[in-house]
Length: 206
Image 1 (cartoon, rainbow, N blue to C red):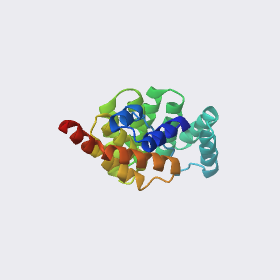
Image 2: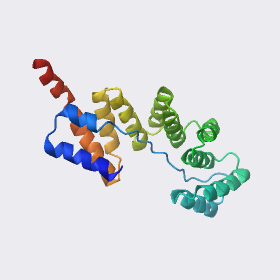
Image 3: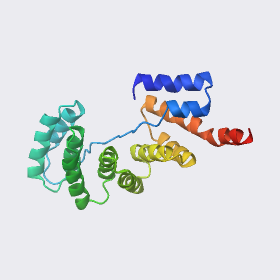
Image 4: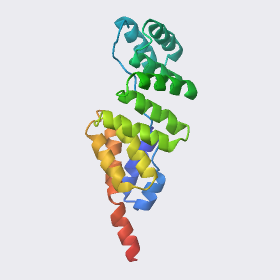
């Protein structure tokens, strides 16, 4: 999240701006948190996997892709390698290719939470909201503590003005978030959104 976004959140909370103004300024961003997988299967070579993961994390996607493609030739049924190739394709703007990799991974394992979450991220960016929601929900069914997927669902509910559902999902996600800035952002959204029924009640009385 940008420092500007964090500053807006802080100012909104500190100045006591009305909730309507706050929510207008702080329209929920489209958080998409794809995740790389690190698991070995079959003949995948640990050192090559580690190398490719490191390259991907540094944004050296073309180099990482070549290493993962080599690993896939060696182990065509590696769910984690397919997921990671999907991640790289998505990060480099190749949405169709990314979805192909995720579908291939899911065909091999219906229990790959990262694959469903990552697929949902691509679907969301492509504007396929309900398909994205279904993918995120499946990720949380597989892994109920999956904070990234819970955050995705929370933002979708907030965008639909389902604030109580959004708060519940944010609260679930917050318990499993380790990154401090993101954790604070989630806490502020919970605080703001929890005030919506009260603010609406006041408005209706005027």
